[in-house]
Amino acid sequence: MMNSLTQKPYLIIFFLLISISSYTRAKTLKQNQPCKQIILYYHDILFNGTDLANATSAQITNETALSHHFGMMVVFDDPMTKDGRLLSPPVARAQGFYFYDRKNTYNAWFAYTLIFNSTDYKGTLNIMGADPLPEKTRDLSVVGGTGDFFMTRGIATFTTEEVQGDYYFRLKMDIKLYECYNHK
Ligand SMILES: *[C@@H]1O[C@H](CO)[C@@H](O)[C@H](O)[C@H]1NC(C)=O
Ligand SMILES: *[C@@H]1O[C@H](CO)[C@@H](O)[C@H](O)[C@H]1NC(C)=O
Ligand SMILES: *[C@@H]1O[C@H](CO)[C@@H](O)[C@H](O)[C@H]1NC(C)=O
Ligand SMILES: *[C@@H]1O[C@H](CO)[C@@H](O)[C@H](O)[C@H]1NC(C)=O
Image (cartoon, rainbow, N blue to C red; front, side, top):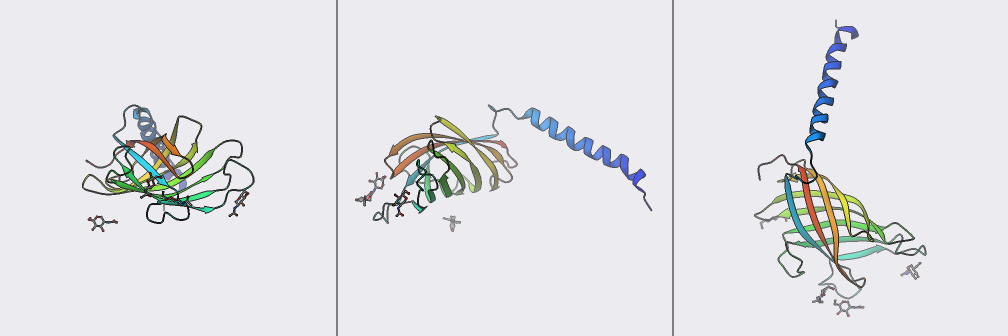
């Protein structure tokens, strides 16, 4: 029968190896050296009550009296294009939601999946984080992926490119991945 004394050295070596490997991995991640970079444009057309064919998103909760749309939530199934043109062929879809969560400025929180089903890529990227709209660029986390993006992680940088009232806005999403486990 093994007692705890004979097990201990193995445990210590095990945790030592784990901390060494996570230390070296942290050291080799450089912000300007992603293993993959994809730039895509997100088009959000908010349902206005009549444009059933055109709308790609809809408000599902009303804003509250706290101003700056506080409490308003939008669910979207938006096209992603390779350039900034709304009518370019979509290369992925962004499916998820955002809501407004500050009363003294426009501030949103996003959680969505980018779904790729093309000859370039098949798979998903899952992205979430705060979107403080007054900032010129905002960094959100790529928390994981599937398919061609198996187990990936990275940063998605948002830049607002165009806003047309409450009906349409376009974001540039500069997606940089720092962990890539496939060969594409
Ligand atoms: C909704 O948008 C469509 C096309 O974008 C426009 O024709 C229509 O007048 C709008 N409806 C309202 C209520 O603003
Ligand atoms: C939505 O909320 C705003 C602000 O509280 C209010 O003025 C408006 O009447 C609400 N609209 C609906 C459809 O409940
Ligand atoms: C992906 O594209 C293929 C070929 O166009 C299609 O058969 C398949 O249903 C699509 N899958 C999804 C999840 O949209
Ligand atoms: C769809 O919405 C976009 C963005 O608001 C607008 O530019 C375009 O004219 C609309 N298309 C139609 C057919 O209503």
